[in-house]
Image (cartoon, rainbow, N blue to C red; front, top):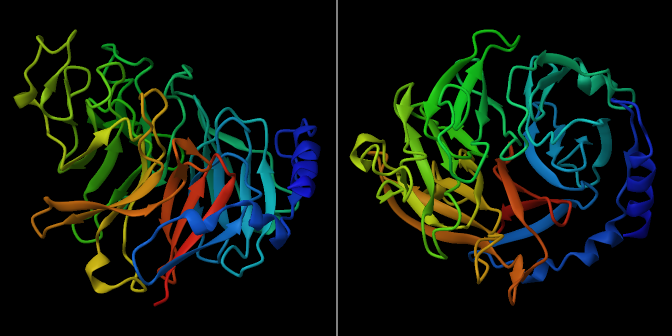
Length: 375
């Protein structure tokens, strides 16, 4: 990993907001990642696209095949040109942003999240070697860093969806400003609340048939090792309330705020995912490479616990839905990033590639994986 560390250190010395550095990762560096420890269902295999994407978070793949990846503490946004070719080149297309965890792409422009802002880089694919200075689309979001990282994505209605986490573990903030999911037009106008009572969503997608919004939500801390569960939620109309801070996981009144409103007042989760698993990125599987029974299933990246007495998560789970939108079952799809209580990787986001393979970002290993079905 020495050559990669050299390029990362050189990039860190670049002070300009949109400076560019090429990070090339020789295939030999992949040997440092113990892929043999990752367990998958029969017929599936995993490979590394790149291990030169420090703190890799949200992902978006353009129609021409460029994979853009956000980061958390690094403040950088990355581009992997020819991402699925087997020999992607990693570019830094933005630098100096505050927790640019989320990325979205529309009409040739890359949108990147920051704690309080959304920025845009125009004509970005033609300028990977000389990226433009990011244009501020809006700076109307809160500046608090607690749950301030933002997964972003364009919905089927053409609006950019942006979650705003609670600025605390448990509190009762302004529901029109915090603990919600919002959306806005690509130019930053028309900002409005889509869902309330959402403590910290770091992943969402739209059902490929109904086009309704589904999202993960992280449960509060310090109620013990085994409660409350993280959630998979389904918004059937705008303005619904999903419980925070009054009720957790649909059935656990909060010790402090639960007496103010009953759990029955809120939309319950479709699936309870387990306490402290840190359910982040989620996508519906819309490809055709995996067996037919995977079609329209939900894949969820579990980042893993940080304060549980025994660690949990650090895996990819699959939620199988019925035609009525209810969860039939959930099961582990990929695991092995946690070994004897110590993680060597932390899955963050999942993304279905055009060929039907599943991409996974990992902010601990600084890697992007590709999972294929090849029996």
